[in-house]
Structure formats: structure tokens, C-alpha cells
Image 1 (cartoon, rainbow, N blue to C red):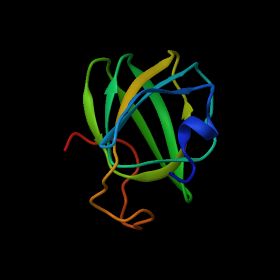
Image 2: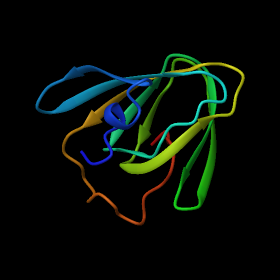
Image 3: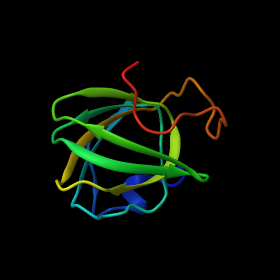
Length: 115
């Protein structure tokens, strides 16, 4: 994957599991930390901690606040993120290796959703 988060932000992303169908990434950061730009395939994000983040891509900004213990759909996207809260961010991403949408689709949404 181009701009693989485990390669662009190795201090934050760890490959926890991978097979031919999915890859599971674990993500950790501290308040104030900003990631470099990276890409995610279609994924399910599972929050371990509650957090607040600002996601940005191509001059679009989205602030995201999620509680611990929820799962959200994350459509394929390219972005950077900043921890704008007062707590660490700890999440898992279950990345699908087969995307329903071509990479770079301009209709992509930023951030997670519950559908």
C-alpha cells in the first residue's frame, strides 16, 4: 500500500496480525502528536481509549471524538491526524485487503462513521 501507516509512522502503528484477507494495525499516540500523511484501505476501527483527533486531507478538516469500546467504519482514505485531546489515542484498525472503491476516489469521506 502506498503511504503505509506502519512505514510512515512506525513509532505509532504496529502490525498486530496479517493474512491474505486482512491486516490489523494497533495505533498509539499521546496528546499533541501529529502523524505524517498516510493511507488506509477500507477498515473497521475499534477504539480502546476515548480520544479527540483532527483528521486532515486536501484542505479538509474533521474533528473526531469517540468513546472507548466502539467500532466504526473507516472508508479508504489518505490523511494525517493530530491528537487534540487530553488523553492518549489507542485504537485497532482491521484493514480489508479488497476495497470496494478505487484508491483516490474523490468522493471519499474523512474520519470514521457508524455505517
